[in-house]
Image (cartoon, rainbow, N blue to C red; front, top):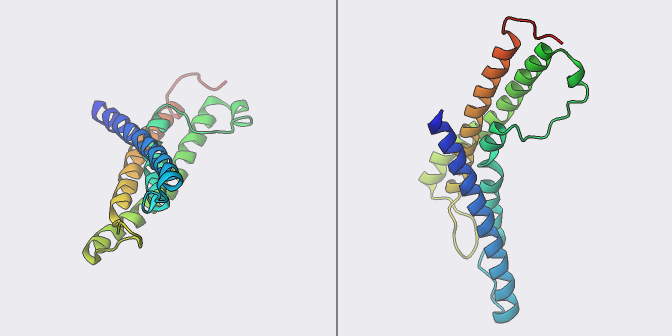
Length: 164
């Protein structure tokens, strides 16, 4: 558990660093364009690629903190057991959806490395690093989602008077 928590925290901080770097690129590009008539090369591409880190890497941490947006107006009226089953079912559906995306992206990485694919632009940024980061972020999220699903199912099927 400590290793998983460490990985989630590390991914969160990498996502924060990517957000800071995005801000620095935008600032540098604006200053460069205004003062020197030279923006940061491929600034929009770099910001778009860093957005992958900002969005995907913190997912596992947010899931651990139960920080995702949830509409529970109707669900709170249901018995606790049903709430736990619905939470597990929602986790399963979201895991299948995002997991499928992660697998598809991860499968592309070896061929992109072998073909030496890159984004067109001044910097010739390779395509595969951010796909690896996406796959890693999705894998960390799926691990946390699996743990939360297990906890929900344990809560749902725990013996005792929990149906309120």
